[in-house]
Amino acid sequence: MQTVLITGANRSIGLETAKQLSEKGLFVYLGSRNLSKGEEVVKELHEKGFQNIKAIEIDVTNPESIFKAKKIIENEQGKLDILINNAGILGINPQTASETSVKDIQEVFNTNFFGAISVTQVFLDLLKKSDSPRISNITSGLGSLTLHSDPNWKYYHVKGAAYGTSKSSLNAYTIVLAYELRELPFKVNVIDPGYTATDFNHHSGPGSVESAASFIIKHTLTDENAPTGQFFSNDIEDESGISPW
Ligand SMILES: NC(=O)c1ccc[n+]([C@@H]2O[C@H](COP(=O)([O-])OP(=O)(O)OC[C@H]3O[C@@H](n4cnc5c(N)ncnc54)[C@H](OP(=O)(O)O)[C@@H]3O)[C@@H](O)[C@H]2O)c1
Image (cartoon, rainbow, N blue to C red; front, side):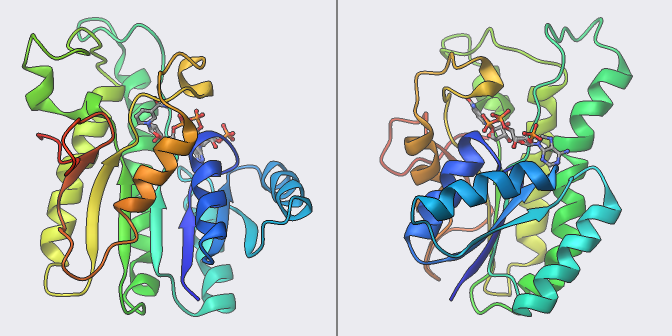
């Protein structure tokens, strides 16, 4: 049975991804920075008939909690097949380049960028024990420098000095990681779930969590011929889903 860890999975896109992966028969570690919140959600899922889901405490900004989560998965599974770095925050609003404080920018980077790196580095040896390891870093179209340079892009005006830059940085890190792991059976990609109605944006997004999760899964449960070091976006009309960097 394939095992997956999803960070920030106690609600919204992460939770829906956990549900869909459980329905597909994977064993899901539902990451939650607050264990009781995660356990409450998992209890409800079990009552609804979802199987093979377990809550695990993981705060991506807290190294001790990441190591603890790794020990649990190592003891229980001995390997990890899929890591979905989903936990993310938006930060303060507005986020002008001229006035957003370094402290506010760092706070967003600590979760969206350094958090994803910390989790990845700690879990890499468990992922290397899988036959077909996958790392999916959840990015945003707002991390695309190419789109942000195009005045005709529909979200051209949605610029954030903390959030967008943290996702552009995550994209850059992902390319470097995919390159490093290119000779191994890893697929390491960034996936933008698309502008989705969640707590993140006060449910303003046009997309559903169901669509966001199934897009993430489509580009995570891939075969050996699938691309690595690629940027997929649910907001790209093209069937390939490939987004410009
Ligand atoms: N919604 C969109 O339109 C959209 C578009 C593009 C990309 N994304 C990306 O998709 C991902 C999920 O977004 P969402 O809309 O589902 O967001 P959300 O509704 O705000 O949920 C965020 C999740 O991340 C968790 N989290 C935050 N900080 C964490 C930390 N330090 N450690 C562990 N978990 C943490 C939250 O936990 P708590 O419940 O404890 O706060 C929550 O479970 C994010 O990376 C986001 O940037 C979203």
